[in-house]
Image (cartoon, rainbow, N blue to C red; front, side, top):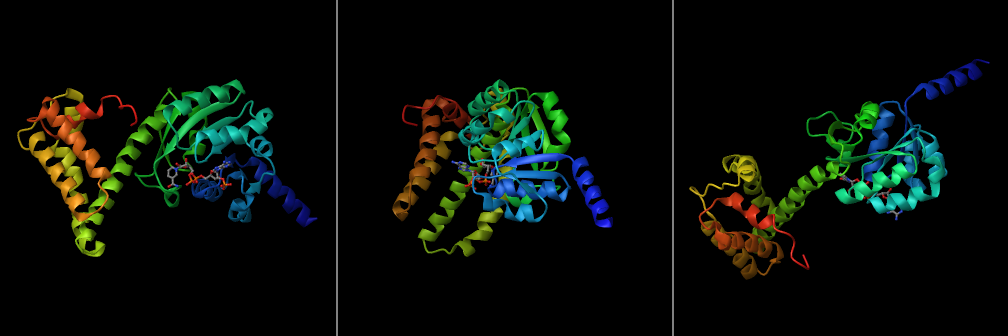
Length: 311
Ligand code: NDP
């Protein structure tokens, strides 16, 4: 009798808990799942490879047998897949379960793909939000000023689910155009991918001269600390908005000579030169386009031009 009462109480507790479904259990989806379990949500999960749900199921999550079952379990479905096309592949088999649901797609893709996805979801009677999460999986659910996600789409839908979304990270709603979350996300990743490639290329250049990465590391770290000052002293944001680029302290003529030196040093060292070639093309191209005496931010004059065929 006691056991039955306890079981009934547990069931009603489960019913009273807020519910969320997660579709996609790569490292990111799994981290999100653990964050929801930590906050005692009723969590239902689905993944193409079911075994990736094992650790979450061991902590109380429900493994849905079908995508339709996963959608039926909660009004809110968080999607975490490699890209948006996979969402269609997965959800098209569960169209009947879409009306009345809110899909929050946290996957990476282009802003245009997000806009198409919103229309697709709305056609099937589902609300749609896009999220661009700015942290790696181990930081999901942690309270830190660096742990946040850009969101975009219908604001009322966002506000209705904001408390649930805050379980994963702080939220930063960017606007009604559903593509905006990815514009902010991609712009920052644009910087991250290029910066990491440049940083590792720097290590490769040092190593080509027999300098161990461990020896080079403190100099690299110190230079990283200097980057915020570099951007601040270059007045990057203000100059990009005004279109005036102060070259009084360092101009594109001198800087383009410098990018040429990095390119030639890399070539002499026998390492890959594709990255310094591109950088040199941008800097030298800016100087050649009438900005030889302008400052470093004038490279935007080249960068904002349309892509050439083949780029
Ligand atoms: P992945 O990008 O590798 O996503 C893996 C998920 O996609 C798994 O659920 C996988 O299923 C599923 N998937 C891939 N291809 C298919 C397919 N053809 N059919 C069905 N399912 C498929 O790993 P993450 O979890 O790391 O990333 C998820 C999203 O989060 C990505 O868009 C990523 O850009 C973004 N993100 C990731 C960060 C990170 O540091 N990991 C940081 C910020 C954003 P299965 O398990 O069956 O293979």
